[in-house]
Length: 421
Ligand code: GLU
Image (cartoon, rainbow, N blue to C red):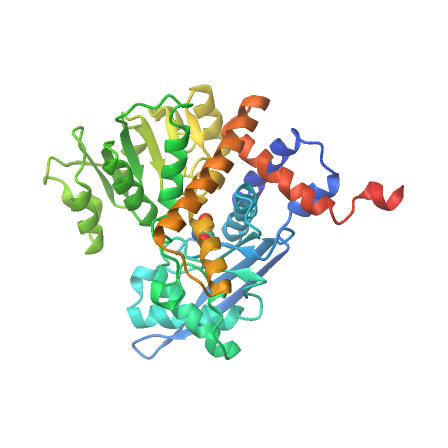
């Protein structure tokens, strides 16, 4: 057991934000603990006829502002602590964006790459069989996360429909378009971050042509590479869990996405198009203007934070920077666009998907992009202003902005002073 759990570390942000607001102590008491975390063992039949079990969780952290919302990840190192922390972050992410949701998260402790496609389908359906009673369009709404995708969401929606005996597309988001998914959900996490960077470019005095390094080349990493390269920025380095590649002249995004589409690591492109091979952990220290962590938690920590050369970090992953690393970056003048704002594009378009499912009327992709851009810009601007007014980092500002909304909702049920005066 680590000395401090991931959740303990995350809760430090809550205290930091509370110090800037005049909120009732009830609010902190409510937000300090996950409301409900359910743990199950999923049993599935493997292709060889054997049965195998996998640990799985669903956490509903806080639902004051609406049904809980958050993805399901399939990862061999997932734990209950990680799921609760991710659900805590979702609570704040939805509040930053003013979405009518609380925060939730789920996980299965599995390496999906070791499963056949049929086993993956059985596991996805087993997850819904186990949790059907606690999820639902007005209760808790899952979505994709690390190593889960739209096909998995489609299986899950179908399983839920079979259990409840009717179509209920709004019970999960990130579905295939043909099954009620939203246009624009696929690249929404990256696109939200991209709109944020563009909107704050003047305030942050960003150059016309930035050198960009991207850690992690899954959904978020691939889409941000494409979006930034199309604007003339140079993607100089990209990593995944198995290695990294570098090119001072700019990497060829097509080569990289092709490699990933056939299950090869990014380093397999080394030697082509001027791509040079690097170790995965060299990426953080690459000479660049913008660093985009788009992998997992705790990737930038106290032992490598001082190596960061970028003046701006866009956190597309959840929790990629540890609190001590944050302090090092701040002392070195690196600005961090924090995860609960920077990667909120995903859940924002999930919200738009849920709205479309409920109204039964679907918008063209231009409308989705426009709505996402407007929301990223207005909440991004609000966070920027809090940061300036209070003289705090954008992370603290984002927590203050979110906590203000959470506090208002929690206090609306009555505070101690109401009941005792
Ligand atoms: N898993 C994504 C996140 O961490 C998306 C969640 C959602 O769309 O509900 O924000």
